[in-house]
Length: 434
Image 1 (cartoon, rainbow, N blue to C red):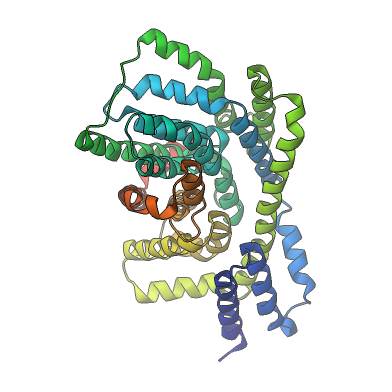
Image 2 (cartoon, rainbow, N blue to C red; image 1 turned 135 degrees about the vertical axis):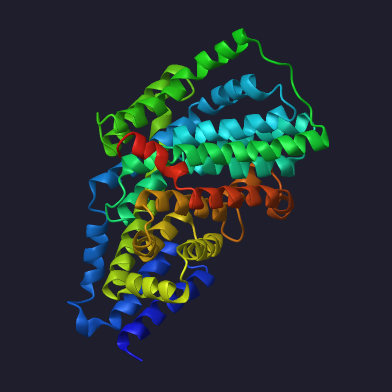
């Protein structure tokens, strides 16, 4: 057995062993990469290669957008925006059977898109809506399931940090602007599909509905939510129009969110040091993950792992649609035990060359990959959103699993539609010439 094959085996065995030992993902990536690199020390300049690759991996102007969008999301989470969006959503759909469940989905979509964070949407919307829904006769387990799955739409509808990470991992073959535009229709489709299941359950269980809001009431709540919703238009519209880059848009998002929060009076100037500290901690975790993942990605390239994976899949399966399905099954499994950011950074360099060779657009694959890994965020044992959603609903994870399963099935159906109907992702980017 050649040293190259031994190195690859050691890399994956050590990585998954460390994960099973509950070593943090970033450390698992760095340690396994170092061990594998030591086996190739005679073929490389030295162990300092890892440090060099970590530094060059985050030496990217596009990555500056991440800390700013994280900060903007944290400001919005504390700035009372969630309540305004919930009231606006309630005025639109609360009169339907199971109306508050629709409100949960719609508010999570809006807040997740504006903040760019699924966790922020889960905690902000869930902490408000779960108690309201229980008062109207909705089981807490059902409310938590709605909140958990609908909050993932914020990772598809821009601005989305994970789409920026994918753009970096793709080596520049997919632009941030194209990914942002491509995420709209899949994100909306996912939200509508979840609402469809909510409608079925609401009619079956005869959930209550509220009084229909008048046009005057809808207008009132729209006016209060208008400036929050305007952020989406400013950020994405500015990027698509070429007025500013995604990184510059993130700075504008921070300034806009801060001014809005101060005007609303939900955040005081004395609160900003704590907001900055929280955002800094989150950014540090994300950046360290990116550092170590970029070193591992370089090692993948050095060991020709993408080429080996491509050759293996092409030899085993003759139909490209079967290969797409196999890759997605692998990603679904990976998503159950790995968070979305390291999964995107590690597996994009492996699978992207395969799908591109088979004719899939890198932007299309990015949306498929993110949607796929969103499902993992809602499943044990690692599902971040699952644990956050259960926590804010004040129920155990085991109580949520059963009512959550139909929602996960809906997400998988939407995934297959987005996978096999490229126009869902690519229509808007092609329309805007991206």
